[in-house]
Every structure is written in C-alpha cells, then in structure tokens.
Amino acid sequence: MDRREFIKHSAAAVAATSVLATACKRGGSNPMAQERTAEGEMTYRVNPNTGDKVSILGFGMMRLPVEAGGTARENPDSPIDQAAVNEMVDYALAHGVNYFDTSPAYCQGLSEQSTGIALARHPRSSYYIATKLSNFSPDTWSWKESKAMFERSLEYLQTDYLDYLLLHGIGMSGGGRDGMGAFYGRYMENGMLDWLVEQKAKGRIRNLGFSYHGDVKVFDMLLQWHDEGKYHWDFVQIELNYLDWNYANEINPRNTDAEYLYAELEKRGIPAVIMEPLLGGRLAKQPDAIAAKMREKDSRYSPAAWAFRFAGNPEGVLTVLSGMTYLEHLKENVATYSPLVSLTAEEERWLLTLARDIYELKAVPCTACNYCMPCPYGLNIPGIFAHYNKCIAEGMMPAADGPSNEFQRNRRAFLVGYDRAVPSVRQADHCIGCDHCVSHCPQRIDIPKEMQRIDRFVDQLRQANS
Image (cartoon, rainbow, N blue to C red; front, side):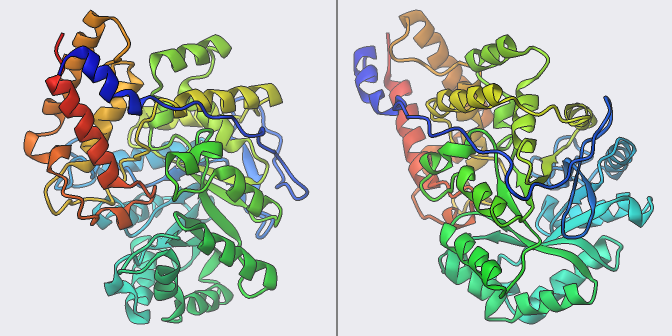
C-alpha cells in the first residue's frame, strides 16, 4: 500500500467537526456553602445533610504505589508500599485533605486495608472515609455475601462506621444482565439496599449514595425514587470533566454527558462527588498544540490544574477525587485547591471550546482502570489504548496529509513504540471480539470495536511506504 492509498483508507479516522453545546450552567438554587479561604489554605465545601466540612480535593485510593514501583495495576504481584502511602496520607491531612475514597475492588483488593492502616494513625474525627459495596460478581449478589463485604470494609478500614457508603458502579451490566437487571440483582432482589438503609439508621453509615456508570435509565430511576421519598440519596458520584461535559455520549454512546448528570443532582440539591476529573490522566497530558493554547491562556496553570479547576467549579460539587500514586502529584493537586480559584465565565467557555478540539483527536477514553483485565485471549487492552493515546497526546500520530518525511518518521515511531509497549502476541490483531471485556468497562467502551479500529490502523501503517 502506498502513501496515497494510506490517505484514502485512513480518511475515516479523521474526526468530524462537532458543534459545541451551550455553555455549562454553574451554581443553582441550593449551592453548598463554601468557606472563605486564604492563600495557601484548602478550599472546603459543607455537606448540607451532615454539616461535614469536606476538602474540595478528595484522595482516591485507587492507584496506590507498590514496592516494585508504579501501581498495583502495573505490578500486580508487588506489595503495596505502605510507607509511601502513610507519607502521602500524612501530607494530605496536614494540608487540609480530609476525604479518602476507597473500595474492596481497588489495588487487587488491598486498598481498604492499606487505607485503614494509614488513617488509623490519626484521630478518627480528622477524616472522612468513603468506600463502596463493590459486589460486581454474581457470586457476591446474595444478601449473605454482600453483607460480608460490607462488614469486611469496616474491619479493614479499622472503624465502626463509614462516613460515605456508595452502591458501586450503578448502571453497569453484569451477570448476563443489562444495567437495570444487574442493579436489581445486586441490591433489590437480595434486600441489600433496605439493609443498608437500616445500617444508616443505626449510625453505621452516615451518608448513603451511589456511583454511576453506564445505563442512564438506572440513574434516572434512582433519582425518581429520591423524589418520591422511596429512598434518600445523600450524595451521588459522577464522572465530570470538561471533555465529558458535552462529549461523553459522543465518545461512547453508552456514556452520559456530565452536563445532564450534574444538572439532575443540582436541581435536587444532592451533593455531587466527582470522579475522573483528569479522565484517567488523559487531560493532564495534552498534545503539544493543546498544551500551547493552555500556556498562552494562563501560564500559571498546568493542564491538570485547568481540569481540576473545572471539576471543582460547580457549587454543587462536594469534593473532587484524584487517584494519586506519587507525592509530587499530591502536592500539585493540593496547591491547585489551596484555594480553588473559580473559573471566570470566559475561561469556562474557552475550556469547553478546547474540549471540542480534544474530542476531534479521537483518542480512546480509557482510564486504565484495568476492570477489563485479564483478557481471556491475552490481549493487553489498557496497554494498546495507552500507546495509541500517547502518540495522539504527544502529536506523534502519522498524519496522512502531512509532509512525507514527517509521515514516515511518525509511522516508524508508532510501530516501533507499539512493539516495545505491547508484545506482539498481546496486540489488537489477536482480539476475536468475544465481548468478555465490554460488560466490565466503566467507561462503556466498545473494546472489540476499538481493537478492530486500531488493528486496521496498524495494518495500514505496516503496509504504507514512501
């Protein structure tokens, strides 16, 4: 295949221009109180249900460091580096961070234990613990197994009550059921939701909520129950960032735009907890052209800082979670929110316009959560997506309409880097479309479809010549 043919066959990969929707609404009739903060001091929001003074930066305990370096996802056989976790927790608490979010599913099942060890060294009144009922597997759907998971969380976290308890991943399919069916199997048919309400009445849970991924009909139903007084939600965790504000559904049809999710919570006065403010780190590592626009706009803010400011800007946001592995990341995020400098209306419009440019790059919205792994056929799904997205972020994608020498240079760099990052037996061409991974993806990515797209792209690169 010559370069002319490559241009023809890769034309489908060129992003279509998208019309930006109306600028996002901020604030509402029931905004949460925000205390005045001085320079260098953490910004706090006050939970209207309990009066909790919560740091706008929440510590996500999903990407804890391991002794071999990196995270448990990268080195699953390495023990968690407890000394490093302790150091980060100490720094966080000393600098005003008081919300810690974990789950039985994080860090190969070890996050709650590590979090409990680190936090138990401090007064219980100095922090808020959030964890989840992560009963994804049908083996845990019974009342007995789900209850045992809840009790283990208390044991591992070394506490007799939870400040914030979430039904984890509402809207995700599982056990051969769609999102609605899985919700009923996990929480209704076994009586688990009613049991959790009882635990709240007993003081073992202070705030009861859910995290949302996937089927918006489940989200809408739970809020309808809230309106009817059937169940009361003290908070809800949603994915919100400036790319997902208007483009979540276009990135993947089974996602839901954050503009809708936040507005539904805001009009009910339900505090929002924000996950994926950096979209799995993607918004912290922008392509050179995008990063240059950010520097030109205001060089004081890194790409990550712009994203964190956007995520914390809505007045109905209680806290913004960041999964932090390294102390330097924690320090940078603490600085961004000490205090939070609210976006101006003009900056907000500018970021949403920038989101259109990023969307048109057509990167895969993978957050490297590893829920899709292991692949039954040995594919390194997050690794494949990471290399593809990395080349986009670094402006190294072979551009069919660019200069011939630049095309060949980037073509070679992409293929060599691909072979180094992902062994050949674990690359996209080995995907058979079994769909085993699809139901496990919180981002609702059609993984087989993306594998086919990347495989076609790689095949075209391998055949292309000057």
